[in-house]
Image 1 (spheres, helix red, strand yellow):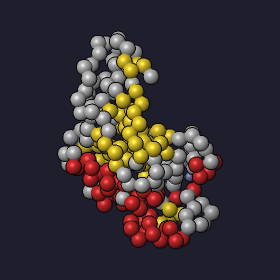
Image 2 (cartoon, protein in one colour):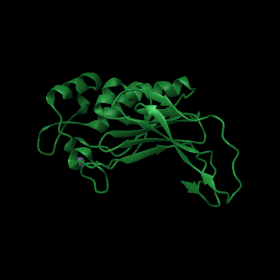
Image 3 (spheres, rainbow, N blue to C red):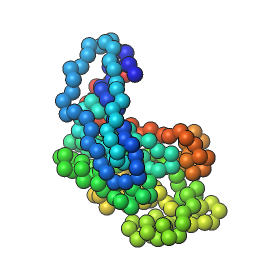
Image 4 (tube, rainbow, N blue to C red):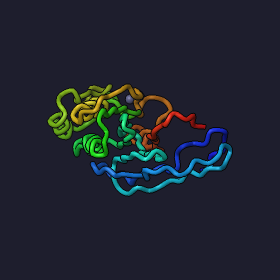
Length: 212
Ligand SMILES: [Zn+2]
């Protein structure tokens, strides 16, 4: 896509993954920013395939990190050091520690105070879950992840699971979006409707310059 305006976008590349419900973190982006074009100059933003994995991490000022979800949890991570990440966190990835792996990768790149925010995902009232798998998640993250569906069936509290994973990683959780993808209007849901569409979580840094 091409951006044209008084305040050129600061992003050069949008990085994306082939997501596989694992815990692999992929580093993306160059740490050197290309010369900024003059105001009004055409500018191209390219999509860059980063490989297979479920978390992207970067410290590149011109990088934008994208994960796609439709009920799984999108998690944005940031730090004062300019290291940031985007995580696709379903229950299988959470069991493999994808959030902790992403925070660990950020720390290895110099991040200290890591903050995380959850985007729209399926909530326990809509997320019926088998008892055996639920017991595994409870075993890792505690009884707070046990939820119940509106119909009284066992459910997984995915937001609570993400909160527990953030806490386990030492990251601070900050308010995100509380919408349930299955029952809030305007979201794609794989489980509720078999939607083929996906939400995109985009994470980038700002150097304080207005973005057009
Ligand atoms: Zn719901």
